[in-house]
Length: 458
Image 1: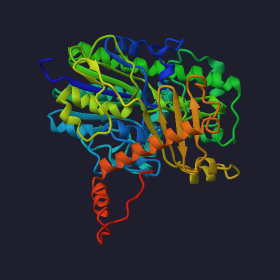
Image 2: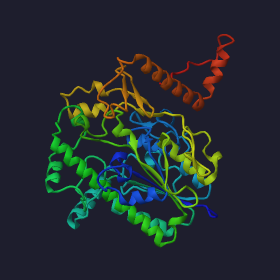
Image 3: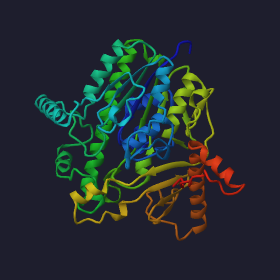
Image 4: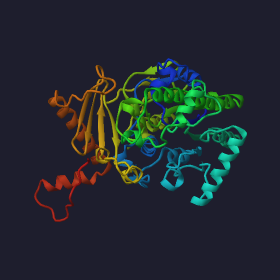
């Protein structure tokens, strides 16, 4: 490609890979994304670094994990030392813009670094934002155009792109497919009975996790159809942007990357949303890239990948491999071919806001969820470490729904995966804090008066 390509990075909140039609779902939920995947690269097995929106996006932008970038459930701020992909692209001459309605992704939490413009559809100040949001929702109801901001996001994006000098980097986040699901203008797969059931559900997903609410099979079916409808709606909004770029003769010069920040429960184990756990339905997300001349056409990457590989891949394709040095993720594509990964993926979950859970559900026992969790996942199995040592081992070939904990039956394999997990985090700690290595080397010659205690990686 003779000119430097533009970049359009799209994330869909709550997007499970197995609900996209290009990943084998029976319903035609994502015809537009199916075409993008067919004209570019589809990554078959992508694991998010975290099943929460803030931590997942921090990993996506920095190419690092929660233990490195610091933005997670216990620390809702992107660490200042974490260099963002947007900063790198802006330094390389890109005009940068972000378009996001999720409250956790905003300049106040550190996600504005590197963006020339950040459109949140919110107002500064809690009262002002509440009044403005109320008026916006009332107007939308009156005109029958309710969504989670996707329509306005597209309007803002088109306006920004129309005035943007090339090359540009645009980040877009759609929130329509995240629980609690709303009634959208187009519900392709959900009928009136489904919508009535949705209105009767508890809005807090933790209610189902804690047993404060019960999900009936018919409820789960309705949620599934509504979720598929939401994906179809978002797919249409993405299609609008693709068509608009094509009308401006910019589509073929734009690297389009589409992924999910995390998945969510749609009735598995009686749960909905992403309130707890490191289950496969939370971790497996879609990932596809399209840009003629830059990435292959109709290519499928079968190797296990992570959302932390997205920033290194984008920067490596645009600026060269040296642009992604220091990131924990890897380039997925190089010289038109897929690269070889480590053979495993890592996911983290920090302690949830259990104080809020206790206030909302004072009779519920939140202790099983007041833990940190870390998982190592290969193509065939997954080990989950919990800070309360109620660890888990699953054979994903015979038990894809993760119903049978094999920890007691295969202690040796669990111990091996546990060691691999801890060794990986120790290596991340060493790279992220190289002074730790210096201290340990100094200690080999005897006690050092200046040596400081070294904290564990986990």
